[in-house]
Length: 403
Image (cartoon, rainbow, N blue to C red; front, side):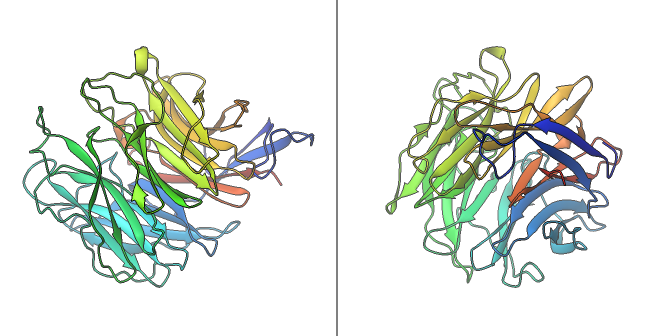
């Protein structure tokens, strides 16, 4: 899709309308938004309580890498890029990418990865805070305190009920590299308050898939964390844990796909929540049949309905999900097309009805294309992804009602 090209499809959704509404079908437009990233990769998106989109991405520098940030309000262009942090010795990876997140009071947190030793997978999560809407940033800290030169990554951040930011990550303190046997990755959690003080470390699951993304969301009075689990027989299906009434639940299966694979597929889930409504999207290739699925919860993630297949053909996964005003889900994924790939989105209602998939942009199926991300404010959804150009570039587009 060339810049500023608008595709208009007649689909049965309004980002703020109900699927069962008798209103006429509405045109949904996808319009590319000029990206503030001249080059770079690993894009991510978030929104702030005062109504701004946050776009982060990594960029090479003479000394190493930097984490960049641009902001925008709905209907406006992106701001000029600012730098969150930069330095040498970062761990920059197509699948384990940085993120930004905001608290209700406007405090913004950012995370990235930095090498901690000579080993390939010896790296730490680093977290920094900004109290002035991302203009300046304090020093970074590591949320984990084991001090081992092992893998710490695939972090997710969500506001914590007691104030501050909750952080979950995959933790390799029991490993030495990616050894077999009992060298297991664990799912960990801690908090960082507004002054940078760390809370207690908690093991949420002692054995999980080695390098799939995690995700977390606040639903009503609960925090829900989703991740790819790892059984003793190498079944790697979706699981979740939930913090409610002051304690964490035991891990529970989200769905039973039965994907037995002796290795990490590097393809984690995504979660979105609004009040008591929750949606989780994920990829599975159980029985050698690649599928993108979504499951809904109406009780703040305590239980989930049967999953619904989202994709139409040849999905590569790399999913994201948003909830819309009628509690339907907008799911994104990469779909293989010939030698390339397309960023696709589709709206799915809780009863399984869905609209035709919509192409947002072109990419590649290569690992370097990364994971498309979405964020929503009102009727406007922003999608960010890495294209297949040489050198590759971060692209952004708007999905919303046609005017």
